[in-house]
Image (cartoon, rainbow over all chains, first blue to last red; front, side):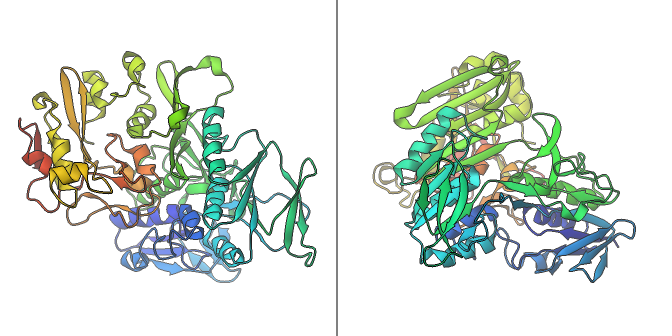
Length: 424
Length: 148
């Protein structure tokens, strides 16, 4: 009987549990999580803080999930070491458990830069339930918040806090928010929506220092910006990004680049050891290389593939790519692939812009293949484009119709339609 | 497992599938009320595409690799073990649009509230889905396909 051990009980770990149990209902399956209730949806932290969701409604899987899948769930426990020779995982520096197949799904940890005052109370990250609970407890006495980082997490934190009637200043070092997944035009449209709903956005600056309160230096009282401006606040959210939680494999033979490098079967460089999710560097089908993709759906899919392979059902990971869908303040956006390249000349770019309706569509092609797109304000049918991109389809015959209102599966040449859209 | 397959050569692009789908998913089940009065407006989970002289009626095709389920951020999209169908739980849906991003048929879309998605549910209250029953040219067929 195979003994499976999974470190991490979030999107990737859960995907692996489901896949393993499809193939092997009997093997011993242990999941280790430092959290108490790992089966919640991390992207819903924003909804939790805004009170649109409760701990109960933000469950990604039901509380019976672990029991139903016959999993021995070890919560509140830390995997402290992996002994790859003996095939053991050390728990909390003491107990050791054996594994036949191991999955490292430890995720990412929020990056908090070194800055003066970062040790004060009232400073939170925004990637897990405990941070959300900390923010919740602080909100009663808060009026003004500064959110550091204008990426996906920073913007969702801003939205949640605005919904709780907190004044929010969002600080982004680059010239535009969401600059990794949107171009300037789309960022500006999103910025307008955020600003209209009350967020103050400061770009091109960072927070240099966090100040204490006059009556309590240990608590956050404000921040000092690059240009010396002071912004009073009682709450700071640091949302600069996440870095792979690779401590467990430091100074081990496991190959780590920026994350743990895995092949198309989600295997690390060590036999019987797999990795997935934010900690892993896995295949990207657009650039045909491994890269970090700290995205929930990517983690889940990688976990599933790892699980199948751990249980002996050989399954190739199709890969992921940069892909995000957003709904900040009801503005729907889908953005996939390369949308903001530096070498613009290498791309053919199709654009439709209706600022009065907050509608913007941009499609980037390289050698007649879609390599990226942004749909803002009008996202229906985005998935058709996603499939064209993922399958590297030559769209030269339909290029002039990609942005037309009646574009759809019917627009495609018969042969392509038959090939792409049969039920798989 | 049930799936609605589309005979493209028989589709005349009349759009009745959309009408019947909308009415079936309204509260009143009355066409006039559904289209003119009800709030939130019921939406069709079927889309008719036209590229003259061709047309096609598209809805969820119950993909075996279930990209929408794998991508769902909240657990709202699941595979019903009993029926084998891709099922959407509106209570768990937060309208993050991840499924919209990955549905290869463009068959999942925001509903009229813009808060959650709408997709074909194969009309659970009916023996045969409304679009199939009411297609005047028998372009739609509800068939049993092999279990996954």
